[in-house]
Structure formats: C-alpha cells, structure tokens
Length: 214
Image (cartoon, rainbow, N blue to C red; front, side, top):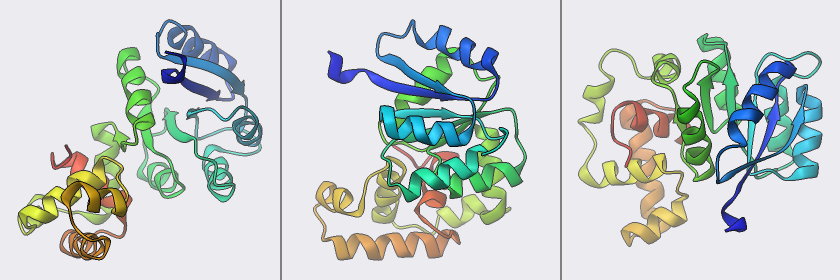
C-alpha cells in the first residue's frame, strides 16, 4: 500500500495557505505531505531533497517566484509533477507557467475534493486545467473556429491526440496503437499543423478543452 502513496510538497509564501492545504490533504488516504517551502528557491531545494511526486506551487512569491522555480526544476530534470495553485488568473501568468513545465493549473478557490483529484490526475501523467485556465491559454493559439479545426483530424489523429492528452510519449503511443514511432511522429506533426498549435502541451490542452481527451 505504501508504494501507492502520493508524496506532496507545498510551496507557498503564506503559512496560512500551507497550513490549510496540509490540514485537508492529511486526511486523504493516498496523499502524504512530505514538506513545505516558503518561496521558489526553497521549493526547488526541498524538491531535490525530498523527491516528492507532486509539488503544489504558488506563482507569486518573494525572491524566487513559481515560474522561475519551474524552470530550475526542469533544468535539474527533476521528475516531480508541478501543480500550480494560485489566485492569479491572467493569461500572462498562465501561459509562462505552462511553458515552464507545469503539469496543471488550478485556482486557490478550487473545491478541496477537486484539488485532491487534480493531484491524483497530474501524478498519473495527465494535463490538468480548470476550464477558465484552458480558455486563457487556448485563446493564444486556437481562436474562434478552434472546434472546426478539430473536425479536420482523421480518426487516427484523434486517437493519437487523446493519448497525448493522457501524457503518453511517442513510444508509448506507438505501442498502444501498434504503429512505428516514426508514424506517430508524423501524426503528431499533422495534429499540430491542423490545429495551428506549437507543441504537445498545447495539443494536450486543446484535447482537454474540446473533449478529445480519453
């Protein structure tokens, strides 16, 4: 049973927020809070030290903010999945966080049970966004006729898109669909071109927003 416990690190400059998160998460049977940090730099250090599965990270913090912390963790190739938990909803905040490697983005007023579900979801490899967050990001790349663009995808491309949204690598997609990796790469390229998206993260977000995810 112990190997199924999701280890979580809390990174927020407000002690009352960390305390509230800890109080709620400690009653979850499959989630364990292994530590806390009060800014991004400490968060990076604690993530390297404690090796949590999921980091709950605020964006706006003194000294080192959440986005810089995300970039440092990516440079360190730390495997922890980072779920942004913040009160900032502007697109100019959402986009850099996801570009820096966040696995999900939710607001601090999220329902507690939904937060626990979000932690489980990103731990499982999914991209997790509240609908409003997806709208903010997708406004950059998929405008007006976004759903119409999706209708140009072939059935196979939709299958591949759904697996991208599940966090699968090209190799895993190839295995699941009994295709070569080269063929999968071609499908991914076609998906990005047809949807006018720039990368796999954008494709995953599009799938979540438009119901193409599994």
